[in-house]
Image 1 (tube, rainbow, N blue to C red):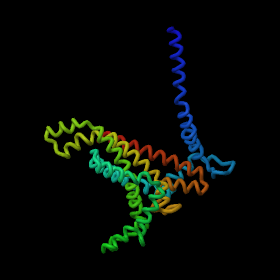
Image 2: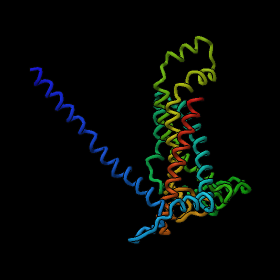
Image 3: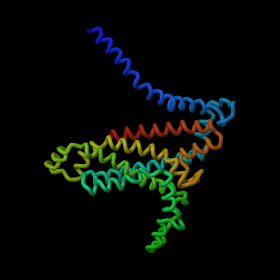
Image 4: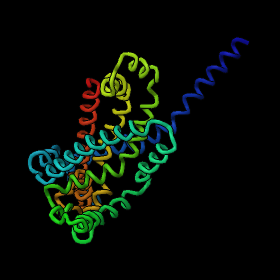
Length: 295
């Protein structure tokens, strides 16, 4: 009987090893293999459709880092967008979560209201906010004229110095409710006994937040910051909806710049841009995690 039981356990163990195979196959086919191909194409001058191409070594990366001012400007726009969205959206989502953490009818309704924009498509959001920002008949300028604040009118997306920040505002409106839900889940996981102990010690609101809430909500904060960073780098459809195809220099970010390069039949160069894009996201995420661990 013992030998039969051992044989059955070995067969079960071998069977269990088969369960990860479908997921591993999908990962290798849709992520690992394309990544290896991107590295190969980044070292060539392939145009995307010719049967032949030449290996150019690191020429694409040299051109990218030393001579491509357009890509550098797109990277600057993306960093401005990311920094603004991460700071504003994280702070706003945390404030909303602190206000809505209690389970009441009003807070439940408000959670649904704030979460609603997240279920909309990016293109729909872009066209709605394109109307809001329209300098002639848009909601913001029309409201300013209606209340006699005509001096506050602006061209919004037409101003190269501020366009990326209006894009950031749209991004925050789009996803702040989603991040609020993440923070609410983190806040509700904090044991109530800790707050009761802080109250017995005479701690005020700020002290409770600084020494109880903030340290214990840090895992949720890490999720929000990392996800927001990736969202800001992948705001492709939102940018195209607001700025057109291709967007102007004021709204051009890395994802749209890579797309434009692909559209210009420079597949090898676009692959090199994609590798730098991936490396930049990985670096920023790593820096953010290290910073949040020390906070």
